[in-house]
Length: 230
Image 1: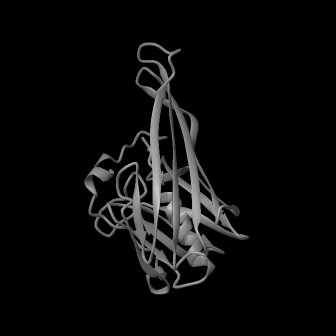
Image 2: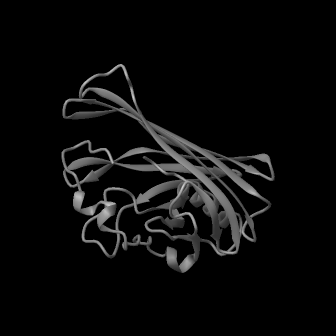
Image 3: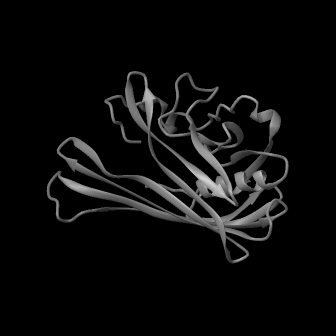
């Protein structure tokens, strides 16, 4: 998290909310079904199950300091990639996702300035052929009382359908919102159509019972889950 103001929500960081679950958007629990994503909690590669479907994933996260800077002054770049392949009852054929992210910050003394805002992009394949779909997640401002902090938001486009991806920072188990998102909601035509709870080893996805929107929410959720930032 990058703080634009001077408030750090240290007590609400992920270290203090390992048992916290997302505050599910109103009405979404009644219009969707829960799908458990298991096997993608930790590690750089492995196998996972997603309801009645299964697949494999990889992900990497690196950071690099610019050698042209000396002492306490430096530029640090954060970058990484992730991928997944999934097939099963919820997917039309084999779906693959390939994702990359980049972010950079400059440090001069005790001050840190973001030089390249966080940006995460994914492209997709179906049965080895390009799918008309993309996912973008980017740094976005967020009000924290009278100050402004940074969160992440974005969008998913797939087969002519557009979904906003909005962060969820609230949990029924916590008195105050978290600094990092606990999960994300998918919004189409100003209505919530799905969500993913990303906190913890097992992730929970809320998706429609069937149809193309269900597949879209599942694909978007897998793309968000392979993000592993250093």
